Image 1 (cartoon, one colour):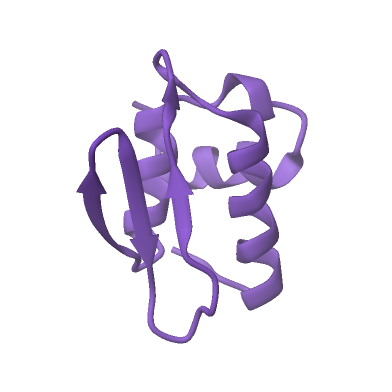
Image 2 (cartoon, rainbow, N blue to C red; image 1 turned 60 degrees about the horizontal axis):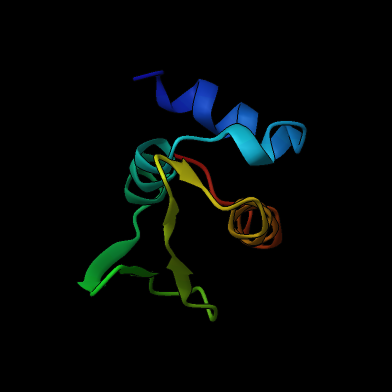
Length: 82
């Protein structure tokens, strides 16, 4: 599993949206201070001070590209860092 800085770089770069491992996206969200719960196949993440709730599902062992984009937009909007 790559280090958090590599995962963050890959998510922020926007060129690997279809090739981000689901477990890496989960690891990144947890390192950013998000809390989570699981409801079926949905992994729901929230954080105090962040209005949006992030709901992600895996596509095999990869994260869905549009969900990676949503995470990137939230990281940029709130200036989040691990």
